[in-house]
Length: 575
Ligand code: ADP
Figure 1: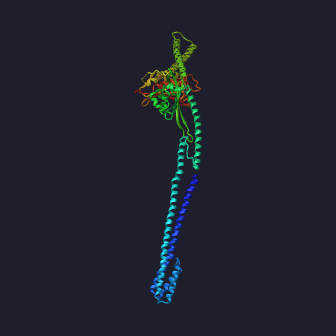
Figure 2 (figure 1 turned 180 degrees about the horizontal axis):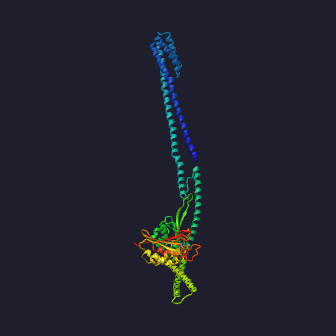
Figure 3 (figure 1 turned 90 degrees about the horizontal axis):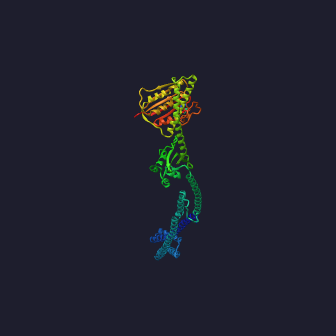
């Protein structure tokens, strides 16, 4: 049965029963009212008239007889019982006789007898009628009771059944909707009645079935895609490790597993921090993730990894994966991917190149030195005089030999830097001494361009913790650059400054300067500002940076294009 019909029937039945109860109640109350009214009007009044007539007869006066007459007339109009009429007529006849002959003593007796008869008749009638009223009252109680009980039973049945009839399916439906919302698409509802809920259940089950179907088809597709991506990652030659936002490993391809040296089950599902405790490589790989360094502008050095009985070099790249959830604006970090690019081959080639350069530069040094010695001998007048043309030729060969020696020196230093074998001998050194040595070495070059080297240095300077030879080399390189990239007749300012823990050397020129976009690049190996006309290798500043940083110092440049540059190097003081 439909809920609407059920409700209509239930409430309708109650309504009818209430009306029925009201009708039965009203009907019996009316019956009781007319019964009592009947007694009052028909019989009580006759008793009253009879009593008045008896009292008037007793009195016997004219006034009393008049009162008798009045009451008798009332009685004559109030004949209600069988035999009452006859008795009243008898009273009337006897009263008429009495009025004619008041001395006849038998008449009042007759009148009294008839009045008593009248009273008796009405008393009996009252008794009979009150019995009828009592029967009516009993009937009223009975019928009202029956109708009331019926109402109560029906109301009770409705009270017990109707709310649960409506609420139970709603409750079941709510539970099922919650299950569907929790992606449990196999959930169904089971109230298969013919009511509206039955139809609702049917529609709900159809919807759940379709959702399940859709979900399963999507799941299969997703599983397929997942497998495809997993296979792809597994077949990659480079190690790839995926971490979720909490740094728990979600995937690691076969190469990654091999180089880490743990089994797949020991890695996947474990927290990276937990793995880092027992594995050095994992510790190195997650270093920047642990420190929270999201972006690092300097390229990290290749990591040397020993796996599969051979040494390999890998460049690490950490990608931070973020998505914008549907309907939201802000990006959400969902994980990280660590890719290790195998650069062993390039590294091996690089080693070969460095070795080659080192060998060649080294081999060049001896012949160049002997060329220089021979040139010195040639210039010696004791051996023989050279004509002007020959002198010029010797000078130019000397210049070239010096340049060649500088280049081989730079290349040799570069091989030290590239192989990571910078040999340092750090000792307490006098900064002033270093600067003066560098100035001496570059003096002739400056003089050639009429450039003045102006030194600004405090009387007493603290010693620095530095490699004397390498720091001097760096300063010579900076001053040489300043001379090369400055105009003739200019001044180069060489300053030493002392701070709490460091000594600052600065080389300031008023030359062509460096445009801002190249300021960071000039420290890269083999980089030369495009358009630089002066000869050079582009190695000087790169080597300088490595030498100074290896000593725990710092080298920076401040330059205004067209106005000049200031190179500052900072080194730690002793103690
Ligand atoms: P190079 O052998 O070319 O001088 P460096 O590494 O010493 O190599 O310098 C790299 C580049 O930086 C130079 O080619 C030059 O363009 C620029 N540079 C270096 N020092 C200065 C300077 N004092 N003023 C202007 N440009 C400079």
